[in-house]
Length: 305
Image (cartoon, rainbow, N blue to C red; front, side):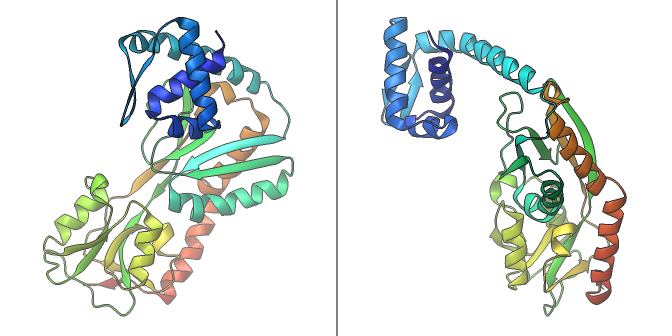
């Protein structure tokens, strides 16, 4: 039995369809089907039941799932251990973050890093789902919640302030009401986030006119006059045409955490990226960024109701 065939089995078990599993591990759908059939013939059992909605584990497939996951962990540990000895400033690093944070905060920092380290390539994936560090889905992850996975080295990178924003020409709502005003918010899947709860409390009678899990889309809709939105200040302050609205109480801020698997702690290119990122966002350069944003505030004043 080959580990590569077990990897196919795990991808199908997790994704439920050949197409999604093929995209996850970079194979074609016909190849996935052939390799699954070969594995089932090798073990002498059907591992999945084929249904109209996808692939469902049979009793035999469910019985070997945990064994396959342990094989995966050993194989990944093998590759992480080898990667952890790489002292060269060359190669690829995969980074994950939320959409707006990747675009507005990380990309300028990464541009400086790439200018200094021409032998390194960066791949930035922006998604709301948490990528798995143990499986090397990403080498470095940025999140607004601490990491709970084992063997992850993490640190709090920075504190993000939030504020209510509206287009410059719009009359602002008053705290405690909001009747007749439109709100731009997260979609229903993220309805319990602290900033979403805050705006419901401060403007209970306002109408949710637009929802999106993409902060960039929220900021763009806000700038188009579609309503008022609670945004990270690093995004709202840099979006043309918006002003902060003071309702007498600021929305709750959030911490940004970075994390990477402990097996990669000695990888030279990762260490170099961490040094630049922490220096830029967790130290003096972050103060310079705040000074720049302060100059924006002078031209776009906060309006207190």
